[in-house]
Image (cartoon, rainbow, N blue to C red; front, side, top):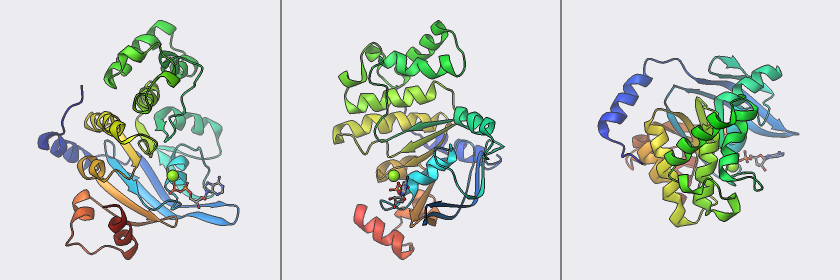
Length: 264
Ligand code: ADP
Ligand code: MG
């Protein structure tokens, strides 16, 4: 089920990107928690089908930033546009953007009292008003895509962490989002389960999904990212393609170098 990234696919994807308008546009965003200035003049433009990996030390604002993109957090200054819709106080805009962006969290956030299948069908039935049989058919397709169709009638607590996270991905995909946001999706997993989740994410990237992924998995970043962004103290300090980040000959910002030295 999980395809390999081939050179040709990657090249085609890159070519397609060059001609598209940004699907996510962030301009000079500032955010405070009380007095604490958590995001500082953050600007980012993401092309359709692009995979952006965000790295950076704990507390640098990575989660806050991606949570602003689907309005789980509110920014105070600057502009955020998602697929041409500006994120403003207008609740209709927020609802529209939530429908277009799927999110996967470190802690899975599945509904424990509902079966795997019900977790996946809930939003399409409630929000998109799909009839039950259509939502269930789609759920089975998605559970097959993430490699666990046989788990459909179990409860989240009966699954391994890796399986639960794959359910969470299927649940996010059920809303047919244009963008997927991942916040450290493998950080809560035992090491032997990390690969099965990263493989699903890799397949999603190959299929052309626009993705922003906060992760410490440098192998994934190197192989799958079109661009890596390093954040520190609420700022984007450095960004570039993986070749840039992993080339020992390139001189990095001192904070980037310090971070890379710690994790590589
Ligand atoms: P990261 O994901 O890079 O670890 P976060 O975005 O979670 O960083 O947090 C950035 C900073 O903002 C941290 O110092 C954190 O303690 C603080 N912070 C996060 N959420 C809140 C909140 N709801 N209220 C106050 N401070 C917060
Ligand atoms: Mg975080």
